[in-house]
Image (tube, rainbow, N blue to C red; front, top):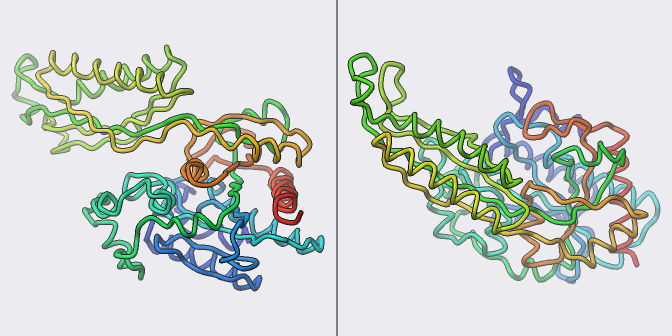
Length: 395
């Protein structure tokens, strides 16, 4: 399975993946998922939001145990973030069948669409729509870098954008959702454990900072006459690093656009996107507030107008304690650890009991071609997931 999936959407120059929602690479990943389901005789369907499902047992019976993850990627992302969870889910089901395990509850594997948000700027679109955390109007307003709307992209890919929206009936049939994922950090590498259980997801969000200055000639405009938004932006990036470090939080400007974007032109507009995360919501709000104040104060000195828009926010997620403890018990007391990364499991936690398994990442690198996991650790993850699925669905 891993060898078949590996070439899809891979950029041969960077060795990173560009599997963006509703593109050809995404379509190839979806075809792969459908074939895996059909090869195993599973019931395959696609929900109203484009998420793919593969069912063992009656999808209508209720109290289903669901596992899976996503197949899309960030720009030039690694091979494991998302796909490891989907591949491991099919492999864990194969292991259960090899054991002769007999589920007493329906089992399902899911591929959630557009988890990374690389194309339309909002993470976890498929699970947000399904759980009602993203309205139809908000989804229809999403645009990619070329101005193409989400409905247009879905329609071009052969899906009905008019069908999207909350899916409470499907969620009501889920008894628990367990997502396996590569660890995006190196806590397990430090403890020398191949597998761990997630305790919580830090609150996190994305904010767009618009720095409005005045376009002018780079060679003829005196320094004292400039209203250069690039200066304000640069200072804000440095301020974000300082404020986050002092608070024990995280703050990253990882995306920027510039207008008119000419080498010999002073910019009229710099737009930067802030990703910030912290252990609790109060700290996060404080850090973002301090970054915004630093931007505004510097903007006043530079003659630059600063506007800040919150584009997304996910509150702290405490995974269901009973389910989390049950997983830890089934796996013999493996480490429990928090994460600063968002996941579909975090979105669904408001609607159904959810839990996560992490597989050791020896370097801690993620969202990069350097992301990796050892084969033995991946197999340990499959064995752990099979143990969990058997414990939840077969007894």
